[in-house]
Amino acid sequence: MKKNKSWLAMCILSFAMLMVGCGKAESDDVGKTRAVNDLEITITNVAIQNSSNDDKQIAKIDFSIKNTGKEESGAGAGDFTIQTKDETKHPVYGLNANNFGSVIPAGKVLKGSGYYEIPTGQKSVTVLYEPYATATTERIAWKINVPAK
Image 1 (cartoon, rainbow, N blue to C red):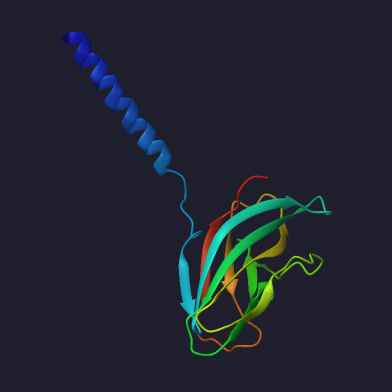
Image 2: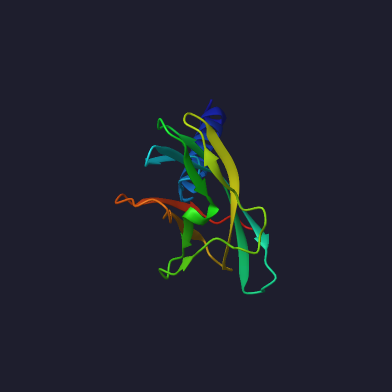
């Protein structure tokens, strides 16, 4: 009986340590939806790619944008910037031809990827929605963890 109690105590202790270790990982806003200007914007995935510059890396960010308004609207990778911890803003990486952008009919969803060149070694960044064409007083931001390459 004493052996069974010891084994049970070890299992509970191991589980508790595992849960504490898992809890230390910072959560981020990938998968969370923000709404502004009749758009529901969700960051669905983040991946890191190599850059031609050794001091930088490319953050590929996948977006899903639903137009909840009654009229068509537009959105594209250029409407977003990446802000690093030093408060520097990094606009869309214009050398990538795969950056998304299009008109979104009312009630429809646009999915696409934006590419942003950021310094290497970033652990987390903030994605800011700052559209050129639309004046918005509401600041929309997502804190995301930068995955390893």
